[in-house]
Length: 251
Ligand code: BJW
Ligand code: ZN
Image (cartoon, rainbow, N blue to C red; front, side):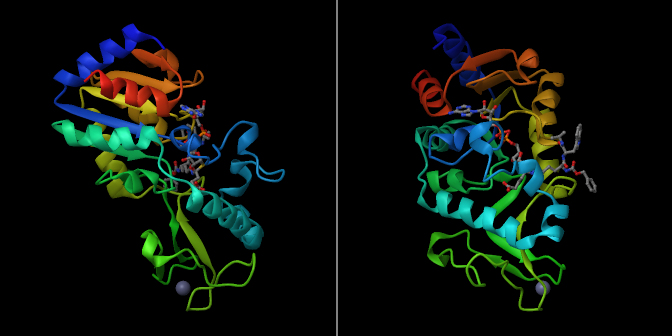
C-alpha cells in the first residue's frame, strides 16, 4: 500500500466540501460478483459486450435472460464487503457526498448508502420490452426474486410482450435525470474517487475527466491500470475492500 498517497488523499478529503465517488464492478468483486472484462467476466463463451445489447435480446431473449438469472442468483447470495460498508459510513461524515455507481447489483444500498445514483439501472427490476409501462420491482429483499416464466425462458409482461431487465445496454441512452445529477456533482466536487472501474464505458467514464477539468483531485482505486490512470492525480493500487477502509481510518 502507498501510505503517502493514502495520507494525501485523506487530507484532501478532510478539507473537501464535496466528494463524488464513482464505482464499477471491481468494488463488488470481493463480494463474489464477477466483473465484466477479463477472463472472469466471461459467461459460457460470451462476453458482456455480446449479451448486454438490445440486438442480443431481440435475437435470443432466453439466452440473455439465462445470463441475467445466473447473475441474479450470484448477487442474491452476495453480501456487501468492507468497501461498500466503508463508503456508506463515509457518506455520513462528509458535508456533501454523492455516490454514483455503474453497478446494477444493489450492494451499495444493502450496505446502507442512501441516494445512490444508479447509472445503468438495477438487476432486480424488470420492465416491459415493448414499453407498455409495466415495471416489476424486486429491489427490496422482501419482494423475493422469483420472476414469472418457467425455467430459463424469458418472463412475460401482463400485456403479452416480454419483460426485460431494467438496465442500460450498449447503444441505449442513460436516464437523463441520473446522468445530469452525476455530471453536476462531478463538476462541483473537490475530490472524485473512481473505484473498481475499467473506465472504458461512456458516458460514465467521462465523469472523472469532467471533475479533473473542473479542478478536482481525481483519485483512482483499482488493482490495474486503466485509461483513466494517466489523468488521475493520485493512483491507489489495490483492492477496493482494503483501500477504502484504509482511507476511512485516516480521516
Ligand atoms: C478491482 C477489483 C478490486 C477488479 N478492487 N478494483 C464515447 C466513446 C466511445 C464509445 C462511446 C462513447 N459514448 C458512448 C459510447 C458507446 C458505448 C461505450 O461506451 N462503448 C465503449 C465500450 C467503447 N456506451 C453506450 O452505449 C452507453 N449509451 C450511450 O452512450 O447512449 C447514447 C445514446 C444517446 C441517445 C440515444 C441512444 C443512445 C450505454 C452503456 C451501457 C453499459 N451497460 C453495461 C451493462 C449494464 C447492465 C448489466 O449489468 O447487465 O454496464 S456494460 C458493463 O460495463 C456494465 C458496467 O456498468 C460497465 C462498466 O464496467 P465496469 O464497472 O467498469 O467493470 P469492468 O469489468 O469493465 O472493470 C472492472 C474494473 O475493476 C477493472 O478495471 C479491474 O481492474 C477492477 N478490479 N477487482 C478494485 N478487488
Ligand atoms: Zn407490457
